[in-house]
Length: 264
Image (cartoon, rainbow, N blue to C red; front, top):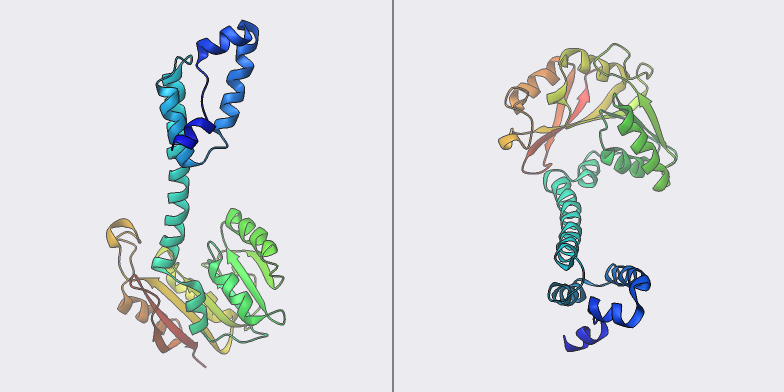
């Protein structure tokens, strides 16, 4: 700690004025500020103590500013860590797609792709011989997925702006895909019958559907109580929509998941 105090010693303001004169003291102040931005957190604590006890002009304001700067950095790091934790605490896209048993060359439709995590995982599974159609109604999300797919060097992703609740809303041909993904979406769908008709239309005979949905509202973390779709109710919708449940899969503590087959 003594070493740090010597290395980052702050010259008091009145000494600066005597040594450099009135005209030059502003440049000295600027130099001090530039030094502060390059300090580690432990070094910053030492500097804060020196500023707080110095005769530097507006030292209390500067002390407060540096303190806020440090805590803002901590907050940003916390947000990033929590965001990653939030995603993988509730859903693990890689694990979910692995359970879907996709193979090279398959054509897959990710309907209501959202952030695109399932799309990226599926694109890796089907390889360059396959294709993943990323379908969403929100153009800003599609733009982000397009940019991230380029960064990941995933050239087998095709972006489609569409509304799956409408007839031919996915813009895909009849019986054109081997598999479809519907994840964290069904509770948002207003016309669930029309939506499942569209999914049924684009799937090939005996095509597969990965269906994942929230298992509860969880105090506002998940869907609202009004929009929440219980597991048994979802099963009924899916069976009436022309799908047979092949198996139930584990997709985390906060969701339920099925792999279904299109009825012949």
